[in-house]
Image (tube, rainbow, N blue to C red; front, side, top):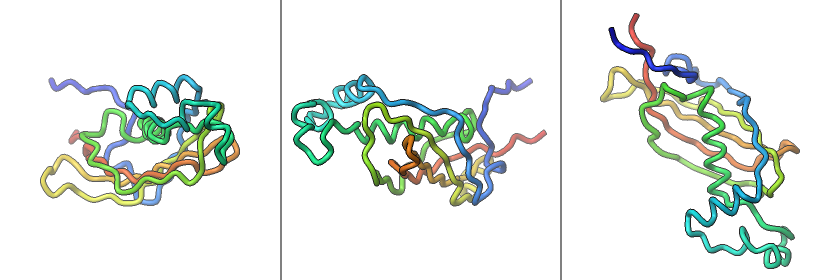
Length: 157
């Protein structure tokens, strides 16, 4: 008998265009998050790491590394959308950071299904385009990303 792997995500058929999924997980960004992401990716930008230098910028304090913000946003979306039902992340069409994130900000997210189509090469899959959006505690949009995912179709009974 084939083994069914546990999942929380939705199958291709369960993701209608226009649906907005509000994600349950939220996350307060810490300085450790920012320093770890920045140093692990070998990013030498003082704007993320140097409080004294950042104090002289228009922001007055260090900015959270935008790649951390993007990774956090996508990670927050997984449980209710693609956990255990995605085959592959096919890529990002566009990513934007309309407002900065600072240490201490609490991020919440939502994902909208903006397109869905059957896979031309895999009858057991479809391609879903998500627009993931992250907001800070003041409901200011801080990240928007369109992501294409190759999703499993619901298994035949």
